[in-house]
Length: 330
Image (cartoon, rainbow, N blue to C red; front, side):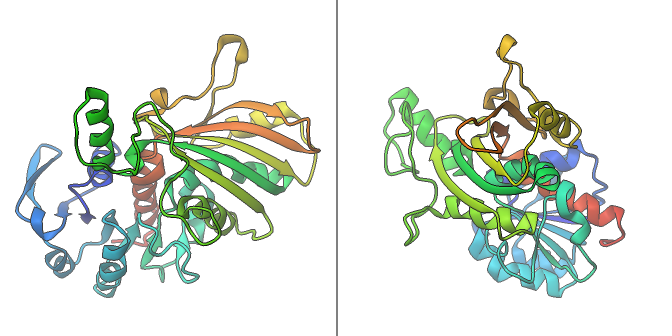
């Protein structure tokens, strides 16, 4: 199968290549694609060297699937061109997520919604993916009325420039700033740009995307997104209010039985999810599961996942696997 990875030299693109190799996706021909300044550079994939090509050359090559991680502007311009050439695009940017004509897919939850007519498929935001992985089975069982989430997000979500900023600050070196303030020994309540309502785009992604993926606009969602100086993954403090009452042990059982979710929840042994242990893994980790006694039918959880893997690259590759397994991509 001919596969294009658009944004192959970027942070998420590199992880996409790694995940394709790890999961033994049947790539017969790889098309690494990047911006004009990267064309001609060489990358290594499964022991073989490939030269980076341009977007126009990739469209002309007509890959079966194109995994996009090159930013919203690139996706808006080029995803339709790939689709017109017969390629199925799985896009990791925010460009198509809230388009009513495009599917927003977390394979464990709603891959079955994909049809042969879907030529551009949106990958949700990283913080949304890990949260809905835990929410979806609980919503099916108890009905979620309200979600209050605070995220503690890895700098890797901003990209290489942010990683360099943290490294420079750690070493006391002056350099380019990805953020308006230092991130070392700091926490910034500012992920993405502010909207007119006072929330950031990252916060509103959690609101809008959660409702779309769970197919329920009645769920009330409010969020605060915070950037912290870690690289292993995103963490989320999530408070849920259900329509119906629950037993905490049933919550643990349901989550334990959910594919792609690992429960780490034992206060007696200080067992709980942390980004330092989530890094490099594909599962979503859930812990600190406890009843919220301040409100009826309410629950607190702590959710952690590697934002570059399940939050981006792995989810996209899983979509590609679904397309292949169901004869939607050839």
